[in-house]
Every structure is written in structure tokens, then in C-alpha cells.
Image (cartoon, rainbow, N blue to C red):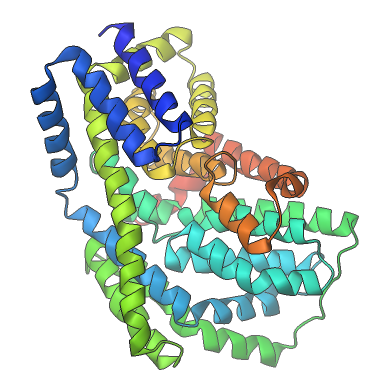
Length: 431
């Protein structure tokens, strides 16, 4: 492979992004441009199209549209209100009480819905006005909502962990789901520590302590929603059904739950289905172009070149992991998670496996790393959703956001260099 192909790939991708081409099209076009350097136009276009089509020919990927639909049903079916009420009764009396409520609610809702954008939208729209009314600054509330919404990407079920399983060549989805629990909770706890310090420094109000009967009632009210996690994860671990079958069961369960709570109406279903199809279409186009680009990179021997370059710099696993983390942190600022996982997993996974790092552990590192990018400009989707819901600006949110960034990076370093955090639970369950 010549350096020319690498430069063409990177340069064309940056140019397409810079002139405002959507990221899925930027990935596809830069992949085709790179391929045209090596082969004729007709084979290049047909090969790229074939790779896009065959990349989507996966039973595992069926889980994504089902989990997207389940997330939509959860958002519309009254589950968010019940989870927030439970979180408020649990955490509201601590320093920075509503900030902790935001984090815990985002962890619960994100875990059930499997979407950081859905969590930021649902939790932010409910808790944002309440936090402002009780004396919290609008910017602080937005910053907490933005960062905490990403924790659900680690706590299963998570669409992005399914994508990583596909990109890694078949790492167990069940093992990844179990491995995500402790890192997700750790990240949430780190955010809560920073939120408490910030709230105490700014003298934000503390809520009244909830009496046990009220806490118990809110827990009972939230049990049907929480039971979804037991059904999905328990069924996968027990081998009763696959992740794809679990996603379909999640749809049926959340649909029934929405009608049970009497907050979902039949006339709302067409819009929910259309929104789910729209979201799924975007995700699937990203997956298709990313898989095709990944093939182009493999064809041009880019992963081997990057691997040789990194290993030439150092053979120390700590140094290599630090370099990979820095690269991924940079990638996350301008690339969405799904294409980043599909493109960079084939590049970095062989390197870390050569150094004895478990692919499950590396998957958790990668997802948490790229989650930080969702909170940063210029393409941070959660950042823009959180700022939009709070009706403020990015420049105003930056100051309270920075210490929360630091908390996420500290969590990333702990998870990176203490693999037991990710691997303890999978070990207990025999993965």
C-alpha cells in the first residue's frame, strides 16, 4: 500500500465534511474516491455497492430497528416520568439533588431505551425546567443532561455494542452487555461527584428527604419499566433468546406497557413507526457506507500500516492504549459513533489483541471514548440536543461542561487500565 491512498482517503473525507456533506455520504464518497485510485471506475462503483449491501445482510443488525422502535415506545409510553420520579425520590435530598436525579434517570432511561439522544431529549425536557425553577442555572442543567445521557450507551441493551460486535467479527453480544454495567455505573458516579462539588460551590438548593412510603410507591410504579431490563438481559444471559430476538420482545413489552399505563394511544402509533423508520434508515445508511469504507481500508492495507506504525513507536501496552485513546478522542469530535466503531475497530482491535487485551474490554473502552465525542462540537449530537432543549448556547454550557468532561476522562482511564472493571461480571457469568 502506498501512502497516497491514505492521504486521499483522509483528505477527501475532511473536504466532504468541511463543505457540509452529511457524514454517511462523506464516508461513501471518500471510500469510492480512494478505491478509484487502485481500480477502474465500473468495478470500483459496483464493488463498493456490493460491500454496502452485503454489510447489511446480518441477522444481528435486525436488533437495531427493534431497539430503536422500543426506545420510541418508551419515550411516548410514560416510562420516563416514572423513572424520573423514582430517581428524584432516591437522590433528591443530596447536595445538587436534581443533578443526581438527572444522572440516575439518564442511566435508567438510557439503559432501557438504548439511545443517548432519546435520553437527553426525554430527561432534559422534563427535568430542565424543574431544575431552573428550583434555582439551578440553565447551563449547569444542560451540561449534566448532556454528559449523563451517554451512560446508557454502556448500560445494556445498547445498539452501539451490537455494532461493535459486528465490527469485531463476532464478539459475544451477551458478554458485551454484561461488561457494560460497571463501567456505565462508574461513569455515572464520577459525574455525580463532580455535580455535587459544583452544586455545593454554587450553593444550588437541596431537596427535602423523601419518606420511605413515597419512595416505595415510586419504586413499585417503576417496576414494570425496570422489569424490561430483566427480561432482555436475563433472557440473553440464560440463553433463552438471542439479542435480536430480545429486541423484538422488548418492542412487544414496551408496546403493552404503554397501553397498560394508558399513556400510549393507537392513533399515535403511525407517527412512532415513521420516526423509528426514519432513525433506522439513517443508522443503516451509516452502517452500510462504513462497512464498505472498512473494506476499502482493508483492500488498501491501511490497518496493517497503522498497526505497524503504532507498534514501531512502542511495544508497551499502556503507551499503545494511551495513543489509541487519544486518537479515538480526536475521532469522536468529528465522527458519529456508528461509523467510528465500524471503521476503527478493524484497525485497532488486532493491535490490542496482539498485546493480550481482551476484545470485550477494548469494546467498552472504545464505546466510552467515543461517547465523550457525542458531547463535543462540531458533530456532537447529544450536545446539540441538550443545548436545544435547554434553550441556551454551546458557549454558555462549556464552563460547567468542562469538569464533567474531566470526570468522563478519569472514568475512561480507570476502565482502560483496570480491566477488571469491565471483565469481572462477564467472568462471573462464564464469558
